[in-house]
Image (cartoon, rainbow, N blue to C red; front, side):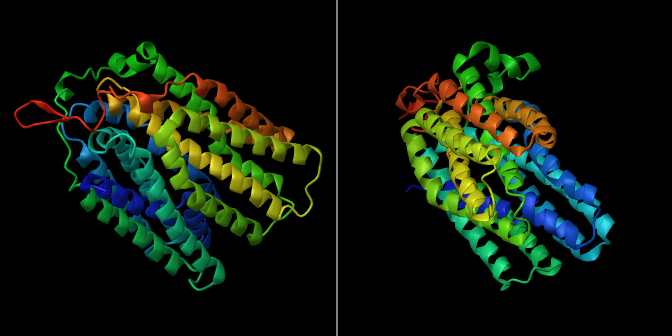
Length: 418
């Protein structure tokens, strides 16, 4: 394990743990309710977080692609997320409920935009500082470490060892802020080779969209990733399917099932993605398609009675598929030949997926009209269709000639060494 690998692993483990401690779907939603913020602010948390993290990336790529050293975009984004999290903790403890809610929402928007800078720059830095065969394991190992930490946090809350009070939850958010700041400091120590092609990059709007027109591998990647959005959208509808089992027990099972799925699968998915991200995407799509189809059939046949444990099983399996999609899509984009435009490829794909995630809100309307089992059937079909889309991808891990391979670096005199 070389220095670059250790820095990536440490930085990702810190930020992934921070993500879990400040999770808008659970932690921030609970906090806003607890301090008396209006319900409509709670409903805006996830859309602000998701769209803010993805939609700005194409614009950020124009700036990032022009820089020869890009690690500072990630470090700066992490630091800004840390400051935003600390601000949330202070607001929750010092401001009236409604005012605190608006301030927290605004700071969440700042955090999301800062996160987009991290996302738009990370794969490019990773591809030039960690060699093929280890990139998936970096994310997988960091995900496992973070999942264990978040699981401990969830257990402390659920058992009452850590009181479920705004003071202690705000303290956890402040800890998340500290972890982001620490990660920024660690990542800034990374030895990143300069990208001497940066000044030649076409960062016009047409240049940013060129990969969609000129790169069939990238188009197939976007199609596969778009279909596999189904793995991210499924959990709320699984919970709706088991809504006859209301109360905190079901929510606790969901959190535990999600955390355990990440713990047991993150490293394995990372290692499998390093071997073949294409086949990992196909396998994840198959797992998701099967479990969502079974869940849908359970709903249509009205076989759910005491659904808490059954729904938790569905969530557990679907989250294993989701972890597979996350690991494989990141590794595939990192390892594929992006013709020296890794930041643009990353930002373009994330922006397009961000738009589709916004449109994914229409599934909620479909659930109101036809029931969650209908939505799950549609999501199952999308997951299964992703198998076909992923089969058209190349085995990028077998391509030793990629110009993005970190085994090639530039000496100070301009020569190449391998």
